[in-house]
Image (cartoon, rainbow, N blue to C red):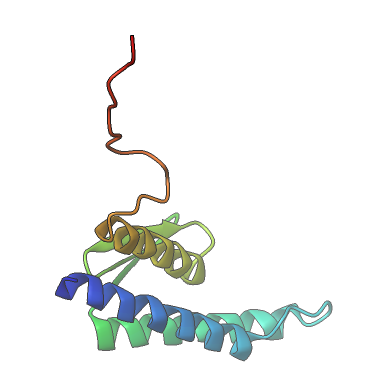
Length: 117
């Protein structure tokens, strides 16, 4: 296993941990308190950006969509920081699986067997 894959595995676990913490801090949207939920959501996203920027060297961009680049992988989402991190996690998992020689998408080299006459 390469150092890059070890880093991706560590970051995938960290992203999962931080996304769960952000969800718990934000809470579920309860009808009637949209402003409170939105403030908590914005604060949780700001904490995610600050943590991953400061601690892991991530770069976040925002235009029509939020994007994140970390450990050589870029992902984006039109739903914001949380969506971009979820998409980053998915992309990182695919890279880890590909390094193990397993392709979760079912494409790739296929052994060619000779035909019987």
